[in-house]
Image (cartoon, rainbow, N blue to C red; front, side, top):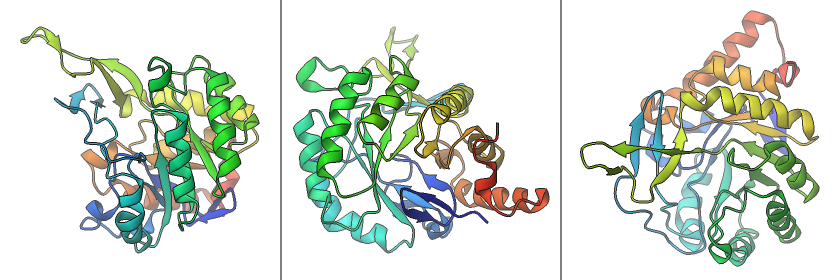
Length: 298
């Protein structure tokens, strides 16, 4: 009833824990059996370990949160040796989310992952390109095309590209990533936001701007998923402010083949289980035998 297939990988249901919000899965095992999830996208991984940003990293805002974590992670090698082994024991699909500050970082990370048993790669092109003045790879379509085409040529895993809503043109970006060889797309990543501490008369975050997520961005994310899914012929995974099963159903009706849940995991650690159960009950109530029947019907 809830099974979906993305790039030849079968998911027991379309609910995936989003990168950076679920750790490596171990952190949520005390709340429910995370093996019931369709998949887990790892914390953003880089070729070398990263301590992340200094100062405030998470800040609550109206109907959401802002974060400036800075891709804190143990590095690819440590992940392969330790975290991946534990993730594979969770009995769900493992998606490795990969970031980098330059093309060489991405390439080395991908090559190291080729001989592992991860199920998919999620390529985060929202990372700033340190060799080109710091503009994110995912802002200009031509730059994204170069990154995706290079990574596609060296990976032996299904390649999902995670799109930034800060792209100059999200539909053009999606089409270019498809042309470059992306097997699927996930969107949206966080929106760039700003917060000020009026007492200190300064920005809340050391890096000035930070990523906005949560229910506040849902209508924007839903619109972008709808636009992109109509423009490409590859699976689209929708995320951005999904808080309950109703939101999840909306995203699939908009064209998403699966969804990811992120910020809601912080406010409701049981969200994954509740959303799966809610989606199943909805299908039963509506007499729908296969969730795939509703994908893109709006």
